[in-house]
Amino acid sequence: MEPKLHTITISVSNREDAYDKVGMLLHQYADKIKLRVGYPIEQKGVSIIFIIIEITNDELGALSGKLGQINSVKVKSMTLKF
Image 1 (cartoon, rainbow, N blue to C red):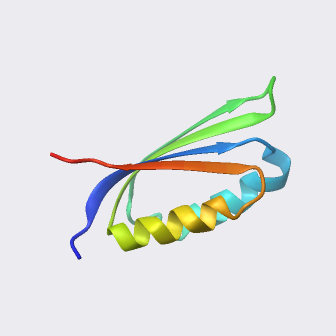
Image 2 (spheres, rainbow, N blue to C red):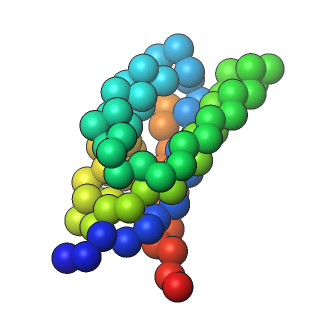
């Protein structure tokens, strides 16, 4: 299967509990991440992470599934089509 570009939006509603777990998981894909932007909203205790990554659909499913298993984390992904 050929790698494609995907966007992943990750919302972390409990930064103290989940942020390190998300960071460690994303570190495993560091060589495939093309862009990573994080925006903490400290007043609400929430962080939004936006990623552009080049991986296969199977890898996207695995990464999204692992992220979604972390408490207080929600994940949305989309494949970019050109």
